Image (tube, rainbow, N blue to C red; front, side, top):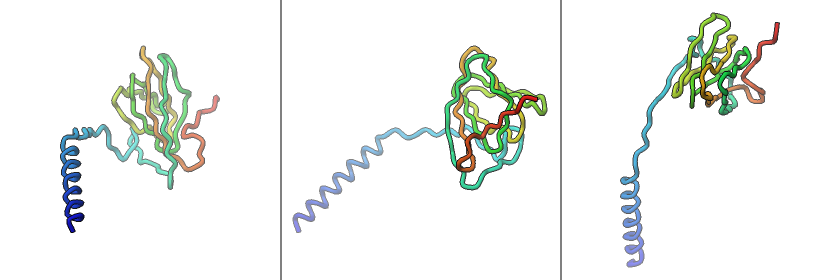
Length: 143
């Protein structure tokens, strides 16, 4: 019986110590940066069933530009560094996405991104596509 009392007291000491350590741990700071149910142009999101998720970091040196392309599925981008200028080929409108900003790119709309700045643009890009889909970017063929 004494053995069980000693084990119980030991467990309480350990639990008390663990609770004190957890209480002294700094709390995690959570700051929401984005929330939306539509793309940057107001389109409803076209989510594939049971999507495969891919995340990459894309770096655009100053002056670089992507070819005109479109995305058939959600294509998310968070700007880690620099300013990316996005040009919508169908409307002729252009907008900038700056460091710390997030967007859901337009779907099935011809567009391109360009770095007009003097520092590299770094993007965290996340795609959701049907399993086995090679890419979420369809380049526009030269006419």
